[in-house]
Image (cartoon, rainbow, N blue to C red):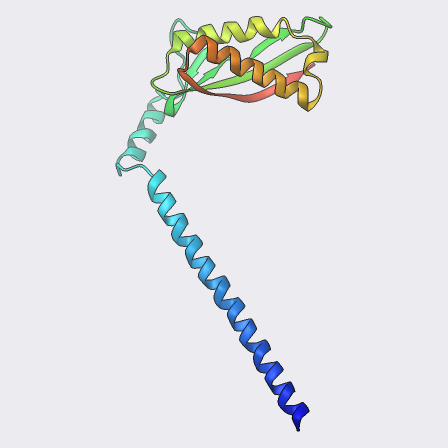
Length: 170
């Protein structure tokens, strides 16, 4: 009889434990959904017509068109400037070529003349790099750091981020 009572208590405790786990998961799900809703409201555009305005600007060709007189630059939304691909040979071995596509995120309105100067500076720097300097993940990280440092010096803080879109060595 005592064994039956103990078995019934164990089954009841197991059932209560399962219910508690389900309740805990449900509460965490509700908290996660609420947090996602709050964060989504914070980063969503405040103006309901902002998305429509952005679509019409893209349809008109303003968002991705090339600027006249600056062949190496195209602008995107949110202050991002796409530089034309940089293709050059390495310093050593000179038979190897490198192709690098970079985008710049400006802190304020994009300055296209500054972006052109940065493009030319990165091109000149890539001509001085040897293959041994950029081998492996550590070498690539050093290259990214060097280019970011050069962009920071050239832009004097006007460029917030340097984004590498592609990197190919042939």
